[in-house]
Length: 231
Image (cartoon, rainbow, N blue to C red; front, side, top):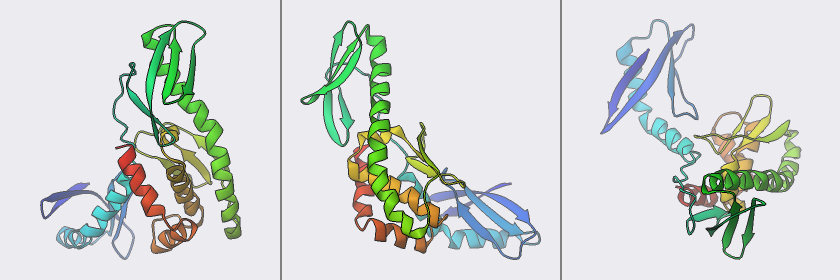
């Protein structure tokens, strides 16, 4: 059942689930969905009152997850357009012919394509190849640091995720968005550390934040850079 409450000028919409439990629980998932689990006999007005009291925390959680939403603006893949790679801006320089290639030269990403319609595909594949090459050596020293907690990811894979920079499955697989290759190394390390922390603490509790801070004291700086750079 979907319900809503008003908190100031903001409408908070939540999914209400009744079950055999003694207390009310509120969770916010990475897709920004609010789920409220309540005892079978809990009156709706009491539930709404609790949700309203927890509204500041709910909004804070949603803002936290929003920082992981890639917001890279739409590109036209035409000559002179700027594109990011590891936090630096490059301009596209396009030439037509074969063989088809993509390379960095100076402050340009030079693309040779058979036709304009191929440029986007070639650049996207180039980014993916560089993400596959760059992410493992960035991740390995961080993985080694977490071995003191007797945890290690089962694997690290790349996957296009329109609303996430990274995720960690219950079985310990870390998934990274290849779009991260456009961000500085510190931003990539921040996302990897964030997901590694989930191997120790599954939820965003204070213990999770404390561990993240221990492993990367300046994580907030890199989180902010990631939000601004690809916004």
